[in-house]
Length: 187
Image 1 (cartoon, one colour):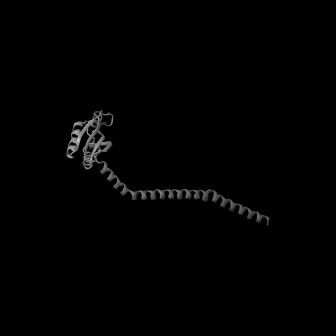
Image 2: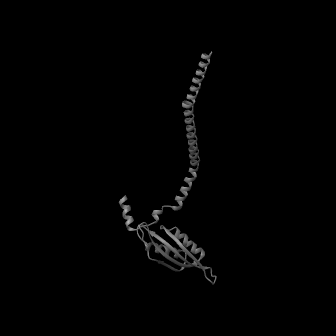
Image 3: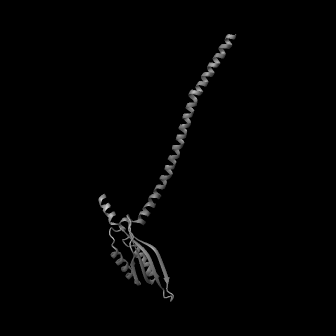
């Protein structure tokens, strides 16, 4: 009987060792791999969901890009390769005359040179009715040259005649000669 009990104990120990070995060397490593695969699957699902949500925003972003491109226009074409100050001054004078503005003065200041863009500050003064002055500014905005209005000062005359005196500080831009040469070499 002792032999049988020993035999059963040995069989139980072997069965326990087999179950322990199975759990340690097969079940737990597989369980870790299953968890890793599950985490990878969840992460991939999140990436797919994010991409799907972002792809739904793509048409709105395309529309926004088209609006911005329309607003900016062809920026490079509005910055001339040469100074062309006389052409600009003549265009501004023509706009003033077209809108029947009086006491016209257009005075360029000393230009500022950089590697990328050169700029010329221009002081513009005139007098006229508010509608005429706004028409003039709209015309300046529609010029084929990039013009940045830095400051506008409008003064109503004390006699209340309806005429407004306008002082404007604007800046016009052109590309420097060195930059034009670099652009020609790239082509």
